Length: 192
Length: 168
Image: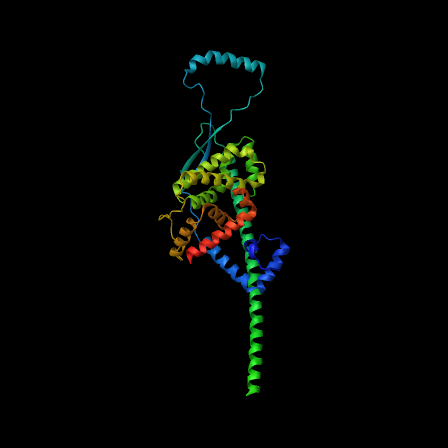
């Protein structure tokens, strides 16, 4: 296999196809030049990765609010009799429930330390639903954390394989060097 | 994509806008951190993060592939940052925040790296941030930046190269 070159990042982040990954690992174990590039790349990655994550200073809480009345400037009493008549007519002609107006979203920010709570509503609060939502979120969070750990383990396994093969290469080179030195020493003594 | 995002999206689109808070809770921190590393100012990053979620809610029905919610959300954050950086042309570095606790291991190193990251051009910084801190695939970053995968990789190499030369 040729040098990693523009596939170095794909190799490092394990985005090469499986077959190429195996081949690339083998190549890296044998190629000092690619190993050096890889080590430099890893060093930069780790230096960045060491930066801490920031906590948001506030929390965004999304509260769907009712759409404000379009005719708010006029007195409602003016329209009351007319509205009553229209409502009666509509109810008589079409008793089916009409769809509710689309809610207008309002994002309000709450302090980061405060728990995320829905805005106080005049109607009964469905605590079961809220608890269910929180549980669902927690389950998703745990699943995500597990997936992250799995990914980390896979990366570490890859790194371990790389270091093992690197170690084998070093041992092999050391043995070769030792036998060369031995040979040289024998030649030197025979010449003497 | 977090496991339950798809279901939550369905709920929101089926008339349960409160469920959007679940998505916010999942994605607020990563999106805030992404914007913070692009903009550099915590308060502004928080405001933009909020804008980003508002846009996401409004546009949610336009999301075709619901399994790609995270990439789509990062794309919105990318556009939000881009507009902000264009408005504040020339003020694109990441400012150091003295309030943030320094890492006990090597604070000087951390500050140097953070400063160096802030000196990268926006497109390179974005690739570095999305790849290193958010572990996005090259294809996902390419979709966010609306650029070919090869360009994204070049930006990463150039970004790393510049970081090395600054930190040397």
